[in-house]
Image 1 (tube, helix red, strand yellow):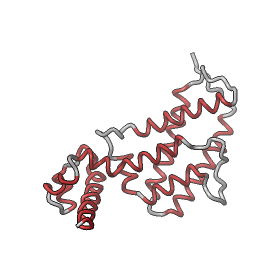
Image 2 (cartoon, helix red, strand yellow):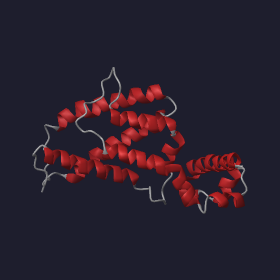
Image 3 (cartoon, one colour):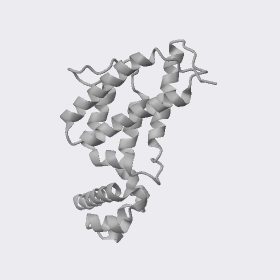
Image 4 (cartoon, one colour):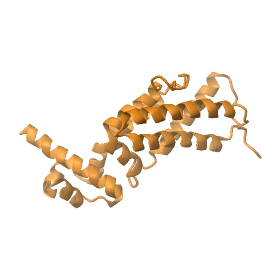
Length: 203
């Protein structure tokens, strides 16, 4: 009996992912999920009270893991070597994107209307706070830094990682290759140039 319930719940889960990916959260309906999963709508409500709870079931674990990955990113870790493994932060992204490709897409592209719709901005905020902490540890002044411009660069970096993960989630070898190339380019070439630029606010 327990196995049967798990099978039904899995059918609902798989059907819901397809609907959320195709229509987004706002465009998804329990009726459409029922049709896609081939589970009577009355039976779906026995497992999920509404589509919000169902959406949570699909993305919450991924959301929490990615957030944890950003909170605990080691800024001191060297850039990925082009001929070796990616650094831990990126390797975590690779594992998540390849193991949960549908959930990954849904979290970042189908969450408008949910509490996850500002997740990218949340990640940028985490990166900004870590940036300030790193500056403070190194005894650098940051009160007059151009926050908005720096956050644009941070958002660009995070968005690029996410886009690469979405594009190559079905091919781990290519995903690894392009993330290493991106990391080497962004953290080496660009960062070296940025060191020469003042980020103080302009009046």
